Image 1 (cartoon, one colour):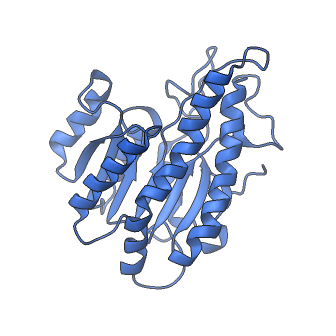
Image 2 (cartoon, helix red, strand yellow):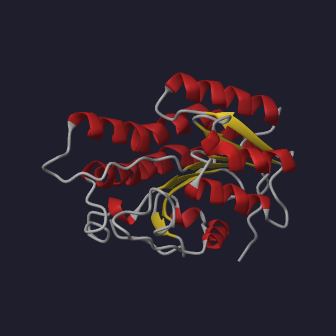
Amino acid sequence: MAELCVGSVLVTGANRGLGLGLVQHFLRMPKPPQWIFATCRDPKGQRAQELQNLASKHPNLVIIALEVADPASIKAAAAKVGEHLGGSGLNLLINNAGIVKPKTLDNETLQDMTETYTTNTVGPLLMGQAFLPLLKKAAQGSPGSGLSCSKAAIVNMSSIGGSITSCFGWEMLPGVSYHCSKAALNKLSKCQSLAYKEHGILCVALHPGWVQTDMGSFDGHTVGIPLGRVHQLSSISEKETGAFLDWEGKVVPW
């Protein structure tokens, strides 16, 4: 398997859970990215303390305030990332930030459905739009042909809960708005792959598996996977752009 080699990566929702684990993974790489942009709502808050500690030890880690449900916040974050990158582009955008409201079909509300869709689906859409110029610049500046996560890519963190074919997870997490928003995110990933392929940008939806995080724990259920498997990003190629994959690189039916 080819080694994942990126000059810059941005991870949303990076102050805890899977997002924080991704940041730690990139920092531990034999050849870590020159820039790792870790975004969260409140970079100076208590919930970002571990991220702050990492930033104090790693000069290539930059923490940026970002609310993925706020277009103005996204625009401001894109401008800050652009300043740090100078004339180079952003190689890898990982849309990880997400929320879940574990309500049944009978208890689901307009407010919760709207809020969940705004964060889990609309957020990645707006992120792709705002960071497209930097992704295009990275693709143009990367040698070789074809698409890859080392060149320029958008990775949308989805869930098996977004699969219409599979009902896995429904008993543990009967969150209607969450399941629907992730199914929509899978379709968004396909749309992005079709629109951005001509710019040299790979786009995929990724089911990372049940991870031991605050959001991945309900009713006493916690099922974890080795986060190191995310190195499988290096094996994703052009033929898989637009696909919904699991952490082993296998296509997930949805």
